[in-house]
Image 1: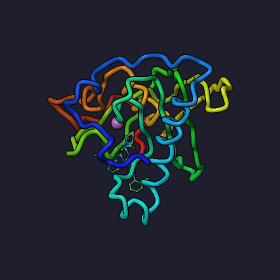
Image 2 (image 1 turned 90 degrees about the vertical axis):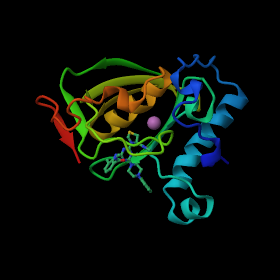
Image 3 (image 1 turned 90 degrees about the horizontal axis):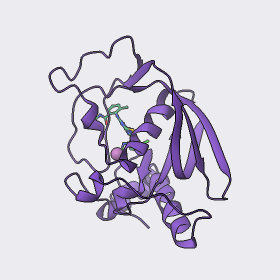
Image 4 (image 1 turned 135 degrees about the vertical axis):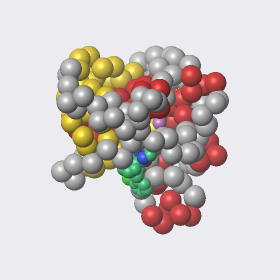
Length: 183
Ligand SMILES: CNC(=O)c1cccc(C)c1Nc1nc(N2CCN(c3ccccc3Cl)CC2)nc(N2CSC[C@H]2C(=O)NC)n1
Ligand code: NI
């Protein structure tokens, strides 16, 4: 199982690389890696396991964060309405996005960044994503709200982008121009 010692931290070169496409159909090994990423998220949200294995809570994880420069992400989160989302995708791609922006009013955290970095992270409010799931099916998702934020954060990792790259350092808490705040 993945624990925090497998998660590379800011400054490790792999976090700034552009990850490689996974050849489809995915190999047994790539499937095992993506399943272990999903398992991490689920374990990290279980108070007993998180405490026992000292796991930091996360709702999203990208393969470069475990030093695997491949285009794979896992998302396991409840949206604003409490609906459970659980997606493990190979080669996720943003097909289109809204002009409108949104941001987490609490700022963003990342399992690869140990300290909190204050500031609003402006992101597209709505996105359409396609990818391949663990059963080799093509998946197309129209996302908004918290899910859209998480997917953009994880897909950024596949392109060597960190959340704080988007923060306006002069004024980190300037409310993003007519953007939708997400609490
Ligand atoms: C610095 N300010 C903040 O962290 C922050 C502060 C307030 C509000 C928000 C909204 C913030 N922001 C933020 N909070 C989260 N979590 C809240 C805690 N939770 C969690 C923790 C423990 C058990 C179970 C769970 Cl569910 C895990 C998820 N996650 C992300 N991100 C950014 S997109 C990828 C995602 C991620 O998984 N990061 C590790 N951002
Ligand atoms: Ni991250």
